[in-house]
Image (cartoon, rainbow, N blue to C red; front, side, top):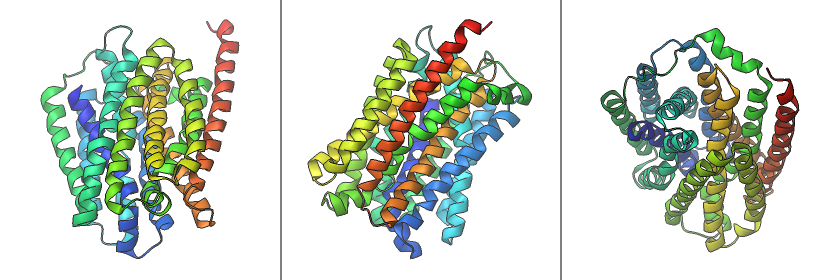
Length: 382
């Protein structure tokens, strides 16, 4: 479990550290901060493209071997980020870095669920996702501090080193996972024919966007709106990460007691917290507390969505589990893009939070339809 979570730690660090370093990247390439946000979107789009392709095409590959190959590719992508000479090549490197993300989390989540005791699948999935949450407490603030003081490229050097360590840990400590069922591409692609899979993915893609709309521009929000010093930004990022840990653990516990209920609770909390952040961002104390709560509500949603997808995917679980992270990174790309739009329109750095609250409201509405559809179809299910 720790080896699997270490991969999540590396992925979480590289996914979120870019957001804390956007001002530095923008200055380095002499572009605007909303334009620098395209690096965030490029990584997210890499996840969206890579998750279904890798999960389907590698359906016959032994699971342990696949995990190792995915983390090796992840390491190469981050090394390319370090060496990128232009912003265009940086965007391409971020896209490549994102390709293994969804498939890794999908396979790792299924491995954890397979090894978990009966009735504790969601907790096991949350344990893997905990690596991503811990990254936001240790990896992201540490790499952000390093990037701010020694140059933004050094943050990705750290990520590449974590990738190498993960490859070694997976090879040494993860069992062969022979009990996991090996599928085939056509079976996995069958997930795309299941309405409940598609609806659940859409809930994540829409509802999760609010967290990313805020987090993408968190550095400038804290300095220009809340009035913090640039040195305080890593502290806020750590608070966001602590919120993710709390939300991840709480979401796993709630999902084991009732998956659908846990999703509703997390999404309604997101609506309230994101709307409140519009006002909270104007004071350094309430802004920091708001960052913690935004992280907590977002992370609480993930275990429920991941577990629900495994429940409704039947024999196409690898693709469905990987697509969850594709959906969340559609939310990442959309959140970063929409947040950049409202900032560029002159609405200020609190506007992304209001956009995020609206996205969360849409997510609640869509999940209501999803649950209603499932219950209506249940009596007719063989």
